[in-house]
Length: 353
Length: 126
Image (tube, rainbow over all chains, first blue to last red; front, side, top):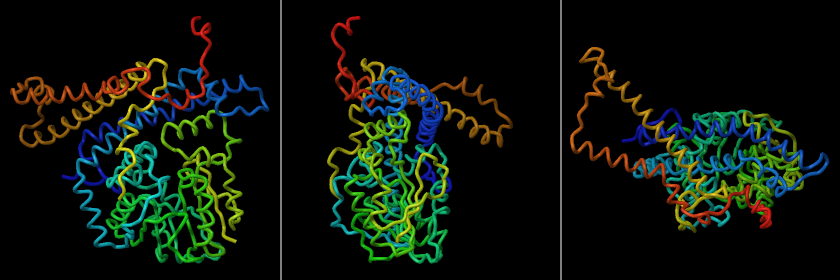
């Protein structure tokens, strides 16, 4: 028997799952909010001592310097272990109610509101079929991936996004076109549709779409939207090859997409977004920073650790890439976007010329 | 849907990573995490149990002393067997790391250790 929902968040199958994952959440908060700042202070000091001002040590040199701090290895061990614990228990908890989840998603697909479009012959590209963040089956290969992702990221956000607060903030602050006309909105790589629904609520008259490569996430996105009676459409599609006409959208939002795809794909996605946007339309981007030169040594170490040990295989090349240049070359004027609660992310408003 | 290239959960069910030269340290730290998770899970359940019992029994038995009732409880053989199985599962959960990474070379080194150059023998001996 389902233990129901806490607002927008599903309850775990068993109290024991909730207690275990609450512990993992508390532990993560400690590792992120207390251990990491300590590591940052000590680590930057160590690297600074070994590399005089004016020199820019590479990641290998940074890691060699940090190796002297026992805290670094303990922190790495704890980050990896708690992430594994989180996915192992979340997957087991959702799987205990697999039949109910799958039936609920099928029912939502049949009744709406909103549509879920996909082609059974759709082939997921290999670059997308990785166990991102260590999630079992990644985004694409586990039929239960949607609810698993949702509860897992609830732990990741340390409970601060239980009611989609961060997605609502990003949708609420997304820059609308100067002329105010918003008839069609796209949530690019929409995942489980948290921002898609928030965008529809902000622009209720607009036709709102969410696309993603991952059908398991889209099925769950559609279930969540349908349960709330929100009329949004979801479609399985590639961001680099979208099924929309030229100049179709007034506003496009992407949240932490580009560091999760290879740079060679990003070089195709950005011109494709330009194609489907009308002149004056706004592309609102919330993303990893991509100016590695301005990051502290420990921040560079963190991104490298996350890439290698938390299965973010493409983030390192994104961080080093000229993303703003690609936007400009693809037909956008680039300006800073609104500040959001997650201060790690860069916020960009790219206006289609 | 295509089959996954690797088994579902290959990242979290494989050997994972090690970060210490002595893999036992990795395993001990992971066991400590699992142990603390287990302690909290059981403590949380006990707190919920006492709340639920108090609320239920307040209606029929006034304000019962839950702690005294728990101390006086006599388990049946079936209950004892069920509790043994739970206990064994807890032991497996806490100490799974030692079976997962039994040897120094049973997991790849983590990111922070990839670039360490081998030390000369003389330095290792010192």
